[in-house]
Length: 215
Image 1 (cartoon, one colour):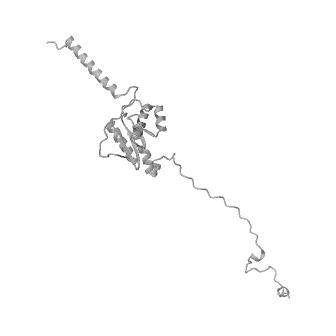
Image 2 (cartoon, rainbow, N blue to C red):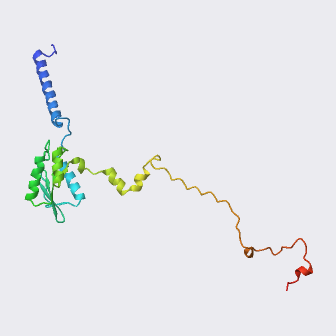
């Protein structure tokens, strides 16, 4: 009995392998955005990053217990100020100035102090950035939401960050060299300030007439 597969069996197997390969290529194409851009951050992770970002700056949601559903707007408070977070375009492949204008209209409608446009990637055009800067609209993407761990550690523990630096970074300060001593100079004093030695005797004895007190 021959075990060699028939021509029809080989053809069917080849078609099955080709179908599997095409499916894998299709999945790989969906994992990457056109142009080699990074995969968008899933909503759950993006919402967590944004929530931590806002909490660190004292911005509290209007309804803290309510979940932040995908693409929903959210109102934040800080004192008397109100900030509208616009997330309807969080998966947009490109954010134009028209989207910023829509956020401006929403801010005016809800009487908010300013607006925040949240996206899963840095897809803002130069025109959108310029319009947002002129109208107090903050553009946020994950690159701004992730905490800068090294910078925060250095700010909290400056001594430890300095100790991690190598000897080439921080050179030990040199001890100051003492100034050379000035040469000693003779001090000239009046005769009445110069103390004589008590045991001083002249080399030639004085006569009685010289010792007598002059009148």
